[in-house]
Image 1 (cartoon, rainbow, N blue to C red):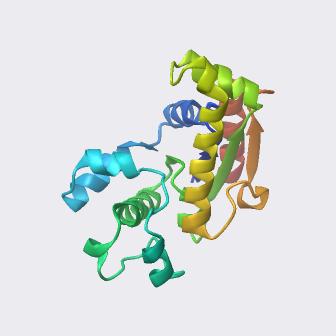
Image 2: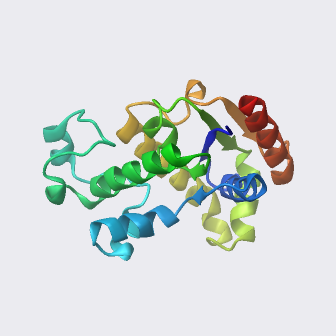
Length: 205
């Protein structure tokens, strides 16, 4: 069976596009921001509220100190009293685990590699690129003003790193977390997809 593929990515590296193309070519489900809608439906809370909290660590320092290193990704008593960020993480974790149990899929970000650390058939990927290339890709999408682009890209990376580091107790940029890293400054997005398809099929054998 093909593996579940998790993709962590630097902002502007094209990791999301790689994941979309990969899922389409392998004909497997693709999970990204759709998880927010699914989490909102499951919880009965507003999708807009969850979207604002997506891939951000909790802002409640007191809550973190009180809770310590409790097991994220598992059902925890008192979920209704949690900060919205933590509530979203736990619900998304349940959805990701359920999706993985049903068969191959591609999951973008959201600590999926950590959430599925006990799943026996995962291919964990990190997509990165030179900062100048990521800035150009960000500008091409008109996601910010040109003069603000370098800081914007750095801020987004820090946000993703903080989220991953907080919920996993690991480091987002630790290569030991991943089976494959791909530099999209060296390979086109289509070539990155081809590399991952080849890797996934080798694991399938």
